[in-house]
Amino acid sequence: MSAPTGLPAGTWVIDPAHSTLQFSVRHLMVSKVHGRFTDFAGTLVVHPDGTADADVEMNVASVTTDNAQRDGHLASADFFDVANHPIATFKATGFTALSTEFSVTGEFTIRGNTHPVTLEVEFLGTGPGMADAPVAGFTATATINRRDFGLTTDLPMANGGAVIGDKINLSLDVEVGLRS
Image (cartoon, rainbow, N blue to C red; front, side, top):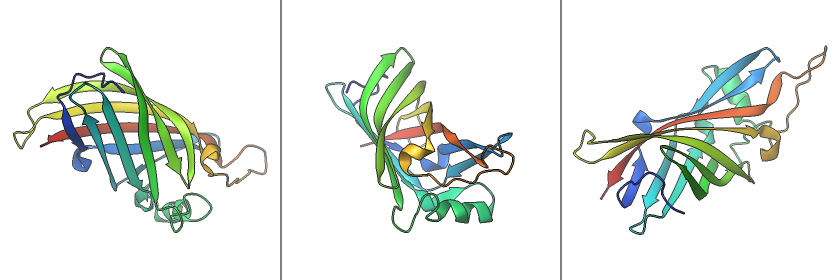
């Protein structure tokens, strides 16, 4: 897979202190609930020939929507089932360059269910970093259907519709640092 950014070869590691993996989903058909994962790690390995690999792991028990009762329900077997599926993963399978924007196609696994997902990515550039090692920034978005990943709990409303929508919007802000 070619790295579309022209980043120097090496292993670029996600800086979780300067990155956010968040999502939103419709609630009661009229609003959106936002959440994020606070425990995650990942790498972008750029090879000397310009190809690249990317992998991310998320500890799904780290989900937070800033509501303890809802977070507990999300961790339960009704949703993420963290007791049996504590880690969600994304493994890139292809990059498609479009100047400073590109697509990353990969295999996303939640609850043991793996499906292809395409992230629309904007490369924000590089800088010197705080520790004299280069850093790079990206934003990415994607939309998935929760049912594809075994998140099939239905909470129908008496007058029609559902408490929780099927479409999940993912929004990622990622800073990576080059490690020697």
